[in-house]
Image (cartoon, rainbow, N blue to C red; front, side, top):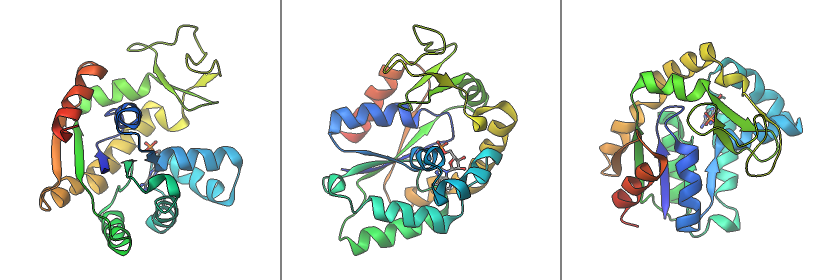
Length: 214
Ligand code: AMP
């Protein structure tokens, strides 16, 4: 299955993508995670991307499109994948369309996770990420068992620079301006499934799997 998870920052795309990886046994392709790994490793891509990410704006399309195109041709993507955080602009969606065409593949579903804006700031500003494995916790909604330590691997947790409140507001504005148009882009192509992203993680996952028929 080739699936896009669409939704504003903080909608729970990463969390639900990880549950879908286990259910569908296909990889999660998260451009945010790929960029953060590049930043951590200090690669040229990471150095270029960091300035954009810290400001809460999008990394240029050309950089991202090349990255994803390469990733989708890896052997673990042959049975499908879950795109999380890509595409984020109409240009990226169009580039994805031509990449898929060249690979003689097509998208199965585009899932739009919908959460009211007021909830998003609260969710992101309390989010903590593991420096080691990237797992997420939330100071209020899903605190780690030992404060400051990841439940999954014991690594130290931190607040991403771009999860601070003023950057979050900027990211939400960028989403509205540049990414939200993709909802109608995919709706017009008959691929869109809307799912409410509020409530318990397990309940949201149930709605997603029902929408996907898996
Ligand atoms: P995320 O973890 O998906 O919220 O991404 C964190 C940051 O990485 C974003 O605010 C952007 O600066 C950058 N980023 C991630 N995915 C993309 C993309 N598809 N296009 C442009 N920038 C991206």
